[in-house]
Image 1 (cartoon, rainbow, N blue to C red):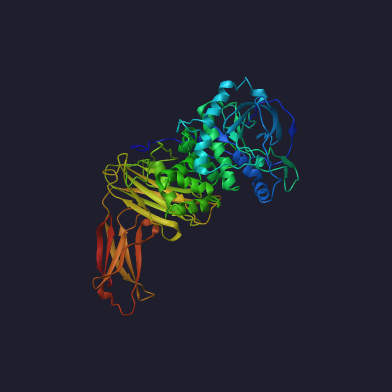
Image 2: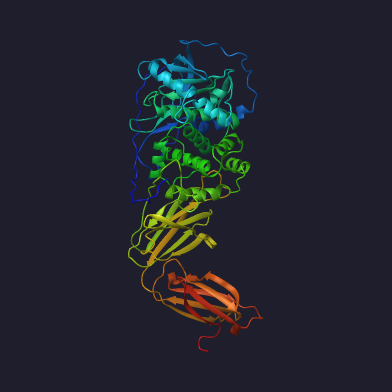
Amino acid sequence: MRKWGNGAFISSWVHGFIQAMWNRKSVSRFTFHVSRITLYVLLGVSTAYGWIDGTPYFYEHFGPILKEASEVPSAPAQLHAPQLTLGDRRDFFSVNFNTHEQYIVQATLRAIGEFCYIFVEDSQWLRTVNEQTVRSVRRAFDEATPADSNRGIYEIETELFGAPPDIDGDKRIYLLLLDIRDEATRGSNFVAGFFSPVNQHRGILRHPGLGIPVRSNELDMLYLDTDPLNAGSEKAFGVLAHEFEHLIHWRHDVDEAIWVNEGCAEYAMFICGYRVRSHISSFQQNPRISLIDWPQGTHSQLAHYGAVYLWMLYLHEHYGGSQTIAAIVKDRANGISGINNALRSRGVEAAFPVIYADWKVANYLDDTEFADGRYGYQNEQLRLRHRREHRSYPVSVENNVLASYASDYIPFYPSARNGSLSLAFESDDLLPYDVKVIEFQGEQPMTVHDMSLIEMGKGSLLILDFGQEVGKVTLIPSVQPEHDLSGHNISSYTYGAQQIIAKVEFNATVLPNPVHPRYWDIIAIPNHSIGGSPPQITVEQNADRMISATPMKVVQDGAIYTYSLYLSPEVTPESVRWEIFFLGESVGSGELKKHNE
């Protein structure tokens, strides 16, 4: 929540990246083949780095196998969990996110809590992990969090989201602290933890195409990094809260959309009192990403974590609190469908596209004292960067590309102290858009307009007092298809702007159509360009309104505006009167008669 506007920022463009890997000592490995993670850099994404979750990796590469396996009965459950004692050693299967190889981690049981076993990779003991680290992890999981000094992560999340699965017949969760092998370079994103749904199956899973075995630990377990992550830090406890939600979510919905799954896991950090600032900061630097299209690879994910967290937080603050997020976790439908189901179950009539249209504005304004409070957050402070701004006119920018449920933020500042701003918008008409326009007095928001889009995705809006009462205007278009739930589709749009300073005068006239006698052409010619907002026409017959405030058609790049009026046989031209308006003022009027009459 804040009460200031957005300053001017300059986006730094990322031209490339250098991939390197730390050399790490190998241990015994079991190899299986998966396609390489696609690494890519989105233009405009900040070079900032931080922690990411390894869980999406398994859904990206093994999702269909895991769903198919979850529908087949597993081997009989263990009737009695083995009794463990401190100092017990065992081997665990893990995955190398760089080479995609499954390997064995040798670890020792270092703590037994009320709700957890804490195993530590032997090579990390007294190097990155010690007794104090283990005590801190156990306390965070079992006993206390920043949100509640009397409840740990386990109790907070199970009370809200429900119990975790129980493949091993043991109420305790296995926590493995290890140096996660990833593709991180120094100063790049790194995998801080993960939940592997492979461990929720018994025996050996096989790749349906290659038949390569994938081995399961057959345990309810989570993985937590020890290098570069400090496993005894508040950041690590937040990662633990994140991963535990994934384990619970798996029980309710084995094939949830990744963006929803990650959003709920980020929200779990919030309810336990842990911060997600690095993810929010990355989103603030690149707010034009798709909410619903989760990218593969690790180099472009940070902003997406911030986006999905803010989405869940917005639902929490404005649409029913934590029980709404719990309903999303427990609903078996995926993605947008599951969110709509959860909202309806909570008595919310607004559907996903409507809420998204408000959410994108809330991310920009973050002001709970404006309007009815829908455009802000109580629990976060946002300040988005934008790609470009405009301070001189005219403006015409083509080939702007957006993915489904992605938004642009384009501010306009006056070039003179007096005038009006004429905005024009046109999409490729492949996907529906929502276009918001915000007026500011100084840096304080005044009004949020909905720009109406007509045929071929065209729209226009005229802002009065631009340079006087209105000190800034921001255009916020977003692609919002009702049926594209994947987010993979993209659309392009063009926008233009003109600041109108001089007084506009029109030469208005009317002519009968020489080919079709029942048609009359009403023509308005301005004395100079007026940008994207056309004049509007009103037509009456004997004081009865036939047409009201209808935009005239632009021809010759704005040099002429026309309106073609059809009269039914029972209507006489002499009974019809027309009037043209621009900027709310009448600029021409008359009756339907020939110009020389």
